[in-house]
Structure formats: C-alpha cells, structure tokens
Amino acid sequence: MTNEQWNKLLAILAGEVFEPMPVGFIIDSPWLPGWAGMSTLDYYCSEEKWLAANLKAVREFPDVLFLTGFWSEFGMCTEPSAFGARCRWARDELPFAEKIVKAIADLAGIEKPNPRTDGLLPFMIRRLELQRSRIEEAGHSIRFAVSRGPLNIATFLMGTTEFLMAIRTDPEETRRFLTLITDFIVDWLRYQKKCIPTIEGIFILDDIVGFLGEQDFRAAALPYLKQIFGCLDVPVRFFHNDAQGLVTAKFLDEIGVNLFNFSFEHSMAQMRERTGPNVTLLGNIPPRDVLAQGTPEDVANSVRSVMGAIEDRSHILLSCGGGLPPNVPSENLEAFLRTVRQP
Image 1 (tube, rainbow, N blue to C red):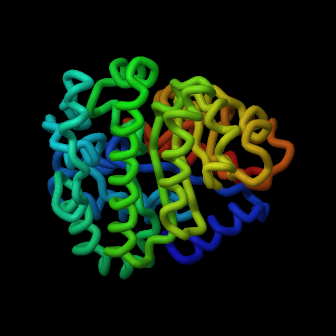
Image 2 (image 1 turned 45 degrees about the horizontal axis):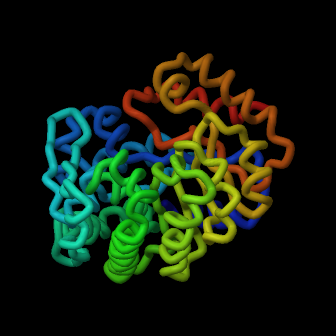
Image 3 (image 1 turned 60 degrees about the horizontal axis):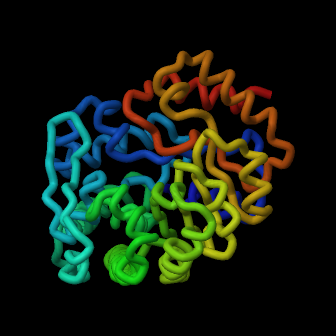
C-alpha cells in the first residue's frame, strides 16, 4: 500500500465516508498468477515473477486498496509446513498440505515450530526482505503480518472432520493443541513485525470458525483469537472468514477485530446488526459466480444491488465476499470500479 492508501484505510476504519465509496480486494495466489500470465508454481518459486505480478496489480488498478498488498505466501502450505506437513505442488493448481495427525494420541508429539527456521516461513520473510527496497521504490510499503488462524491450521494438520469432532470428544487435548498453535501464531506475527518494521496491521484467515455454533465458538475460538489479535499494538486488525459468519460477527468487537471480510451469503445489513457500528465491513458481491464467472453487466448489477441496500456508508469497504478467486478478468474489476464511480 502507498502511504495515501494506508491513511485512507485508517480513515475508513475511523468512520470517515468517502465519495465514491472505497473499494478493496484480498489478492494472493488463487488469482494473481493466472491473471498476470504465469503459472502458480512460477509465482511461488520466482521472486521476480511474484514481484512482477503484484506490481502489475497495483499499477493497473491504482484506486483499489489491495489487501494485504505484496503478500508473501505459499498458499495453504505456509503455516502447516512449519509443523512438518508434507506439501504437494502442481504447476497450475494451489498446493496442498497433507495432515500429520492420524489419531488424538499424536497431538502429544507435536512441538511448537520456530518461525525463524521452520518450514516455508524463512523463505516468506526472506522474499520480503530481498524485495522490500523495490516495493518501496514503487511507492508502496509492507503493512501486514499475516497468518492462517488456529482452527484453520489445526484442520490442515488433523483433518477438518476429525478436528471438529475432537472439539466435543476430546476437549482437553483439543485445547492444548489450539494453545500450542496460537502461541506459534503469536510468535510468527511478532517475528514478521520485527523483520519488517513498516508492518502496522494483522491479517488472520480462518474459515473453520464458521462451522462452529456459539457454544463451541466460545470454547474453541474466542480465547485464541483474542490472544492473537492482541499480540501486536497495531491500528488495523483484519479478519477473514467467508464461511458462515453470523456467530463470529457478534464477538468481533470483543476479539479486537476492526475490519471483517465475510461470506456473500450474508447481507451488509445482517453483518452490521451483528457486528455493531465499529467494525468495518469488507464485501460483498459473490466472488466466484459473479466476479469470476459473470459478465461485466452481472458485476455492475450486483454492485448496484449491494450499494443500494447500504443505509449508512461509514465503515464500509466494497469488495467481494472472500478473496479474489481464480479467473477474475480485468474487465470485471473495471466494471466493479466503474459502477462504484457512477453518480
């Protein structure tokens, strides 16, 4: 983000209203490589290609707040790799981390990773360190420390069904597992901030919280998310959950989240009622069915529908309900922006 964009984001979080309404998108490896004309594997392997793809996005769409901006990542393998998960790679598909927990008893043998040395994490940081000067020469700064959330990481290591069942069948072991993962995430975020002092935001992604009812959320998500979002004194605390988000939403203020990206299946009005007035909402047209697979006219109609239903335009950042999916064409992004600018 440029300094101007960062200051605009802070103003949006403070409740300032802009005309036209501001637009932001989460961009990373599902969208960037294909859109920029390179393979997914090349995007991960080549610092030059990674940088070129990110620079292409910010230069072609300078009015968009791209979040996090210059995100150094290796897809869903990023954090699981530090725990020893075997990662499988393909040329034009997202990587996959195989689970390492076969039975509840295996949890006792898992040790907390060191983000300075373990898995792909040193490569993530070194990419940013090596390219930081070129990013800043382009007028941008690295602003966010990023991690998948504790439940997300747990399900990659253990399996989604197995972990969700264990919350009820083996609560003590599950709590110890989540505590270890949470302590690791805190170390990881703090290490990113130490290495890149321009970081002034936290971004956590965890869709698995959307599978929990309120009782399980209070036990298996709330205390861990509070610890994570409180580990750095930063002005932007950004949470992504594009699964069911109505349970999560009512706790965001307590957790400390002030920017929330949620499922397009929930309206802005529903989210505002649940979150209260202080959480900025990032959304909310359908990412796949409209933004990726629809026509520019479909995108325009969807954007108009979302905008027309918003009564209070404060604490709103227009986007889609999730990150940019694969195959979103430039024409659809341009249609989105053109519609927002229309009086």
